Image 1 (spheres, rainbow, N blue to C red):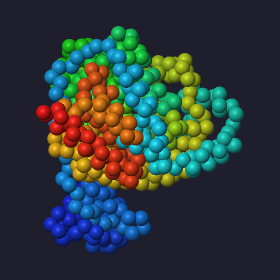
Image 2 (cartoon, helix red, strand yellow; image 1 turned 120 degrees about the horizontal axis):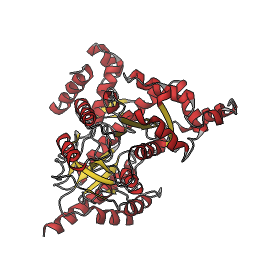
Image 3 (cartoon, rainbow, N blue to C red; image 1 turned 60 degrees about the vertical axis):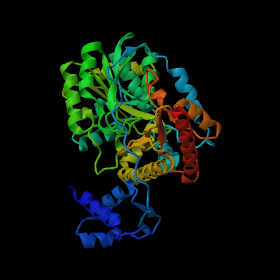
Image 4 (cartoon, one colour; image 1 turned 90 degrees about the horizontal axis):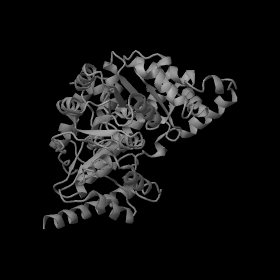
Length: 476
């Protein structure tokens, strides 16, 4: 067990035994370092872990305190019931857009939002860096670097991959207009209309829209809520449907939040290598881990260039700047040409601002603070759900990101709950928008990325009452 986990377990045991009571202050970082003979980083990681588990709370300029007694967490969802992957054309976009557009109003409690709070990010500093970079800009770079992207930004992205053991060169990095463009371009590069594509079940609704727009068929594969897509079911789906590609999230998937174990990622890449099947890997949440290090992507195990890996700064640094990238492997040239034929390239001022921020240092410190905030907000949301939602509900326990997937009692209609909540100024994301077959009708996804307890607490209490009422009506 890592030292920080051992320290966290020791403190958690003291809390559960009553040696540390609600309201008690934990030792300062300096005092804990002296008594435990460990580094400040170890103490901080231990306290972050306890905060993510809802056992302690940080108070501004005061320290860490034991929280009030919390209800036990909800049980986790079981493996989704989907015995056999099915293929077919899609017709989901209209419903997805209707629901998403209804969640954008600022006055609505944003439990259904796909975005974290913009107040979590250093946008003023990015703006100052953008202004300075534009004043020093060589005008010719707006033409020379239009296609591949800003060289300094590509170099910074490659350096971060290399630090994690991935052999990535700056020329491998293709800058795009957000991760969504990268994912769409990669999908277009490896498929033709009528092809089948393997996806998780449930999956990110933007993947469903992309498949529908390109005239592709979705093959939904059963997915474990803790460990990701079932490899046996994946193998069967490949044998039966002969797909052209896979589109998967392997780290902190939207909507389930699972983190595929590293050994399973390696086995996934090996299985796809045997079938010469490309994998489009959506990795936009990887920096939002709550553990000590960023999880390695499936791309780390790719020796044949079959993984088209896509990332973004939208969820971890610069929402609204729309800067993403693709490591497209053997399809690099095809993806580059598709991008030139669509948007030419991403915003140069946005690229320059992010490159200057990365070069100036401070990015990792920002990420540590962001992870700490998101871990605390997710723990608070999970605690509120456990407090207010009725028996029979289940909830995931992600180790990163900012989503919770809630499985409600059978008979509770997520779409009906969505409509009722929206009329009361509360948004949520109903399960059917994450399914090609409009499944998961008794599931919802909740967003922990805003942390507005004053509004979210009463909203969750209201939702819990309605869920209990709908479950009772369905049982009669």
